[in-house]
Length: 353
Image 1 (spheres, helix red, strand yellow):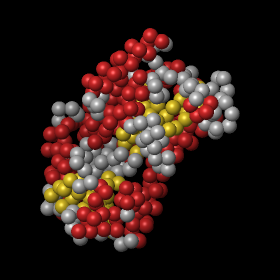
Image 2: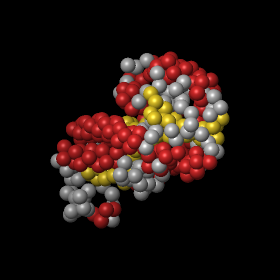
Image 3: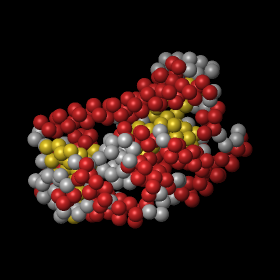
Image 4: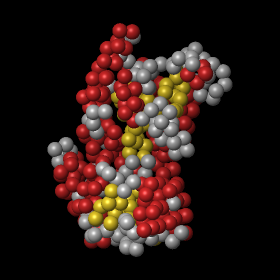
């Protein structure tokens, strides 16, 4: 769905809601939702309990959903049962576009969504897609807490009626190769690397010197086995889960693009909470975000240990090698984001210690 169509739907939805109760946030779902039971499924909620929906496409076994469930339980306890955030993972309530429509119109209270999905509604979120900009999840969170990030989130709120209150991370993408180790920019030359059918990724690895090959992720194992491709770029968890590490010899820890995920809330819903309730939500969102970053480290450490035992060598880039790759990205960043992102902002992010 394009931006114009989205905002047309938003306007018509707000007008329709306005005839009834104003274009605002939702409160407790109809009695039919969750069988009229609380989050623990035991009995009807108290009359003063506010039930909020939190939608996500992520699986229920992922770190982000697990810490979100812990966050919800902590918020309920901190507010004396007044705020009950019920999480709906596994695309139960639809896809990311559905969530954006729902949260902006108030039919969904909260959602967790990829930062890249917000670019159509405010182009400054493109910075989360800039190759080699963020070193790791901690660096990303450091920027998220900055004044520059807050200014972006505030403008997004003004445009859409959706407030960003948290940041999670699915993990950074790495380069995996067969028969040839990548330790410097020169090692990318001629490498047949599988990339998704996305302009950013094709342009990025072409600029690094690769012979990029667009291939469905489901065909990767066979593609590596037959020599159709010599490498891939995917997060550690994805490679571990699909066992494609069995067909490679090296993993270069490039961290070229991360998986930033934003926690959004409908602004009318947010303003309907008391100061104490909002403080309780923010405090526990921060705790959940920190736990998610720790989980990401621990999970990856476990995956790396298992993959290393299988014979794959993990390679850490030197500062010089990373600087070469950042330099090689100048043309790509200029072409895709030159008219959108301020170069001084990107440099200030890179220089964060």
